Every structure is written in C-alpha cells, then in structure tokens.
Image (tube, rainbow, N blue to C red; front, side):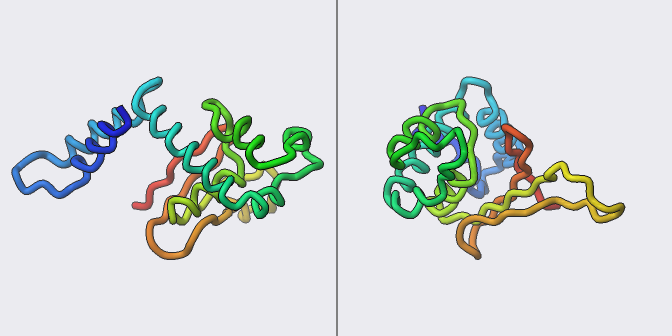
Length: 155
C-alpha cells in the first residue's frame, strides 16, 4: 500500500494538461494522508525507518544528543536501543534528535516554531524557532504543541 500511495502522490502533484482538476487531486491526496489508521500510518512508519537508519549511520555523533540526566533516556547505552524503543515504534513522540536526523536524511530544512509558555513582556510574545537540516532547497515549517506537530503554510 505504501508504493501505491507514493504513486498516487506522484501522479497528484504532476502537472496535468489533460483537463484533470489538479485541485481535486490535491483534495483527494489530503484526505488519504489524513485517514486514521490508513495510508498516513504507512508514511509515518516509513519516515521512522529512515530516521532510525540515519541515527544508526552516525551513532557516535547522535549519542551525544541523548541527555543522560533525563530519566527517559538514561538507560539507552547505544543508538540502536534508543531507536528500537523511541524511534521505530508507532505512537512514540518525536524529539529534537529525531527531527535533526530526519531533516538530514531527507535533505530538507525543517523549522520548528512554538510558544514555550513563559510569560513575556507585553507586546514581545513571539514564537521560539529551531532550525534543522541544510539551508536552501525544500523547507518545511512546523508548529510544535506538546505531543503534536502541525504544518504551517505560508500565504
């Protein structure tokens, strides 16, 4: 089903000069990618595998990002264990290490913005921004809310 989905995405995003409504194709693609327990789960799983492979390919470097003082990661003696428990299983939240690895593996710039919850002086409330991956090329901006990322679109 994953190959079928990628074929559908490729066909939906190509320029069609045969009178096919591209907007209709994009709506259908949006629906398919947002189905609960559907095609989107295959895409998520595929991205998790890519992330884990990239982490494992540079294990010494990424191991330094796992904070040993954090109760959630202090029992990870190596990247393979971290990946098998925190990256590869579905339903696990994505942290900064995973975002960095996926951005690098896909050669995509990922900007993560969020309000950190601190009281800021009047008029100076703004989103905090973290940037991952290479400059130039494809860029994606996400809004982080605890446990969830939303795509931010530029108008």
